[in-house]
Image (tube, rainbow, N blue to C red; front, top):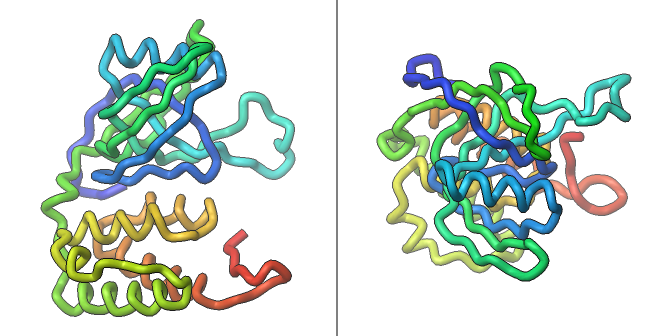
Amino acid sequence: MGETAPLTIQRIAIFPLTGAVLFPGLHLPLHIFEPRYSAMVQEVLARDRQIGMIQPRQLPGEEDREPPALYDVGCVGRIVDVEALDEGRFNLVLEGVARFRVRRELDVTTPFRQVEAEIELEAEDEAVLASIERASLEREAKRFAARQGYVVDWDSVGQLDDATLVNGIAQVAPFDAAAKQALLEASPIDARAELVVQLMQFFGRFDGDDGRATLQ
């Protein structure tokens, strides 16, 4: 977490989901079908519309632990679109609000997990890169997109603020779960941008039987 960002303590409902990493300012669509998470959605819609997205963490010797351990850092998302479906299911869109660090898991009676968390109130939209850092990021992003066969509107990309560009690449690029977690934890924005560049270079290589590099 950032050293200078102000913090606030808050109780949040969490949705532990491997590979689903949300970044501040970005959107994440979710399909909710498990009864415990349907109950969570109903409660947070009546409360503050916020869900903490966080990845479960497999610790050595605790592979069968239930519930699984959690990473220390996640991202609070606000429900900005919701569609109620039959059988208690929901389609949601979360908008990333701020990163959080778990202080402790709460003893609750709800079927879903809740934590006491430090919410980072960093103004991501005010974070800026040096011009040389921005140029390096865009240059590597174009190389990476070309290698992956992506079609990108680079004129529109050039209009994005630095934080949105960095977080956008971090969220949509096909990095593995460990890499995305490392990006979420990286702060300030220039450190995250540097890591994004390194990961695009790393994942741009083809390695292993499936032709995909991995940090696992």
